Length: 225
Length: 120
Image 1 (cartoon, chains in turn yellow, blue):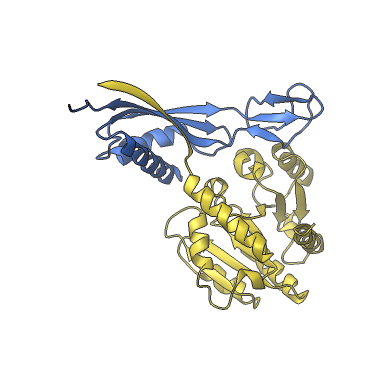
Image 2 (cartoon, chains in turn blue, brown):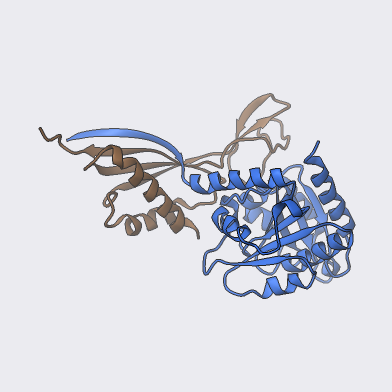
């Protein structure tokens, strides 16, 4: 019997990464800006996205959303009230979305073609660990954090925050009663992901939404520079 | 907890690579996992025995080599290694950086196999 070392040097998530690269190319060809929203359960991703979809639509943009959830379609129904096309992805216990799920749900989405969209939002399953490993081909990964969660969340989940392109603090309207230490939260986010753009928002009052929408418009325009 | 799907993916990849070595027995599978890869080596090892049972990888050992984060420090003009993942500042000059050169890897490095005897 001969013992042999075989060099493989293969990415463990190679299949996902290849699919995601294909998705990224098709988003680029269609000219749609794709964002992947990641946070803990209860941060307010859906409320933030509801507001974003509504405001973008009011400004004449063509928007759509894919929503990941373990079981229900509650979030999709909430988001559909904005008038934007919304498709639910039920993962049935899987703790993250992957590129294959996205490809499958983009395929045969009635009335929606990537080429007819300006923005596509992907609301990931509420989880700050597993979604960080799975590229969905997005241009911008957004990490959300609410004022009720504790300012040290970025330190506890460095992988997710470090891989993010933008950070959104939600529920700023209740920051004061929650004793939210704004300076500390900003410092912690910057410690884990130096230089990241941070938006302080309230979906309820609309605070910070103007800055967020301007950022989206800028990122979309930058695609053709 | 996505370690189970990660282990399943490793087993699939290794099994595919074994087609070049018919009858081989896998002794060891070596991974390179970055400190920022968000997988827990202990959880991978825990799943390993269960997932590999009744596959050509049954009885093999999983070895996880964890790689520290390495980032480029522009002012120092060199790549620096970080102690942990709680701060992304250059240990020499204190400047923050997001120019990572290592730390997100998640790959199968190599496998050690016992090849089957050649039949004459």
